[in-house]
Image 1 (cartoon, rainbow, N blue to C red):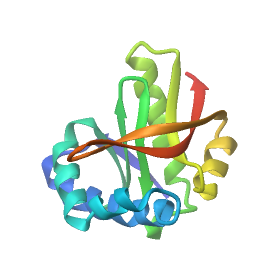
Image 2 (tube, rainbow, N blue to C red):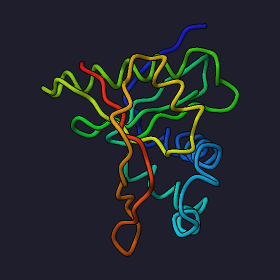
Image 3 (spheres, one colour):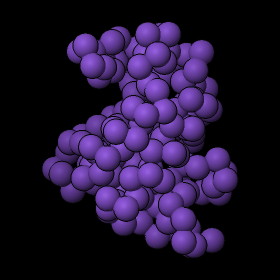
Length: 158
């Protein structure tokens, strides 16, 4: 399987939104406050994906977007792979690209937040050389400001 990485364009917005919505629900339902679930509607992912295209790198397998990563500064904000491509190595390729983006931005350490109960993601990051830096409340952006979400901060020297 060949994975091509490229900067996302406006025409990738729908694919990114679909992967993000499905993956977010898989990893977060039951692990984040109900108030956050209520505002993370399907429509909200389409709006957020369109707004965040400039921060997005997509992984393409064949002719389809298989996953994406969003990086801002030293934070790897989002890493998602479509259900059809989970377990195929796409996530590792995306995480490597995210680490390189952080390094290219002049940072020596990358960080990301993982919902405390998202055991699958936490195992993946640990297998990928990331270290659990401990529990903290991530301030998730919502229309009314922010909402604290119980997470673990993972870090890696880049």
